[in-house]
Image 1 (cartoon, rainbow, N blue to C red):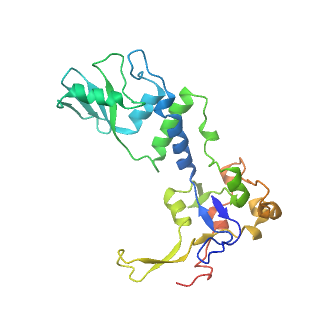
Image 2: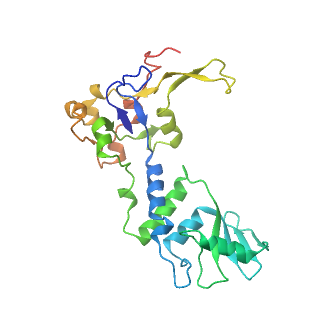
Image 3: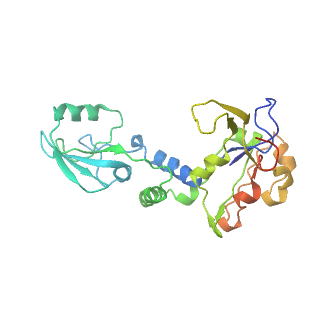
Length: 267
């Protein structure tokens, strides 16, 4: 997560300790995986198509709902990868359709011969799908030297780490350590707003504070393993996050506080 250092001059701006953003490791893994599997990073074969069985094809297959196989000059075998249901369809001007697909820069059309092309359609939502994201990384680790354990930490620029505080923590639910969900991450980086009629979402809201949650880092230097002088020195790059076991990390609810519950804002 990123924590704001100091108070913004804007009365409705960030305050010292405000949680600017939370970044679940699954989101970071997904973004890194998507970057590794960009089509432009893979070659074409001698017939101008993509090879079967590559990391690129495995990624396309896991991130789309349909697989389309051209079986002759007029027909496509369309397979629903979620249900395994199949149907044969006959699009109008299939040749023109394939030609158009092949003209797209960095196209993802697979095959070993023209006329028997294979491609994938209708992207599936991936955010929050832990099983799918880890499955994609199983393939990445198999085909490349990239390891998921080295791609779980959100990267910040030196400038960001000079002016804000990057921290790491863990969730803790039902007496078990757990990863922080996307929902919790969004909630903990949300503002304080009020609506005149809470039952009518069409009524405009009024911003009360830029963020509802904060981490009083100045009072928690020991727990957070930080040197306050270094954090407040804008000439220093500070990143106290450590490669430690999840059970050794600070629990989210032990270091983050709701400013409404603290009485700093009364709604």
